[in-house]
Length: 223
Image 1 (cartoon, helix red, strand yellow):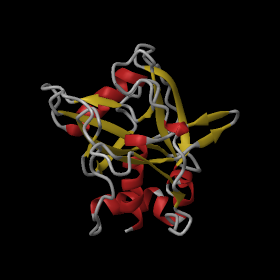
Image 2 (image 1 turned 135 degrees about the vertical axis):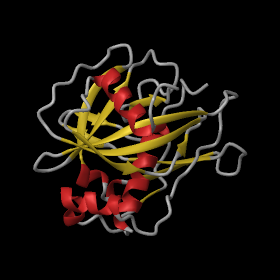
Image 3 (image 1 turned 45 degrees about the vertical axis):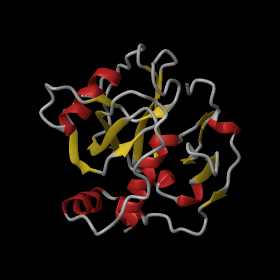
Image 4 (image 1 turned 180 degrees about the vertical axis):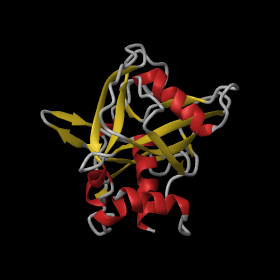
């Protein structure tokens, strides 16, 4: 259904150079804790994508792991090509919520452990963002957390092709947020963001649901 879709082939409509980046002082540990403890009045920019599947909606949770380097980063994965949904795409660690999970944060932490071997020890959950519904009918809750560096990862090759980090300040700067659209007037019109990051010789093409959730994090932090 989506296997032949290449988001890189869709032209860029515009880039949000006119919007301010999140100031550096709002990306500090203290400021992030304060923001989630006392959230501002704000509205997420993106909540759902047009449904492209007949599957029943399923609850999912992803971990948005902010790694506390001197320059904080966000840990992301490249999904394995054999995955049944969103194969090969950049994603947060996460997946379907199981009945045994105590809550959404527990589901996100379990999935991060199963996918990449990221232990819950050294992780401080700050809170979560509003749900984001994907084209594949997953109702995803992003769980934002602080992660102490120095961890050892063990990616599950059945689910994860690669694990990498992107600077948080890069992702929280709208000058790096590119808008795309397809089927402008059709019933399945889609618009999305991409946030390509050049990681040495490799381009990390962040787009779709992952970019949408990062855009909502930007709106939350800039409000």
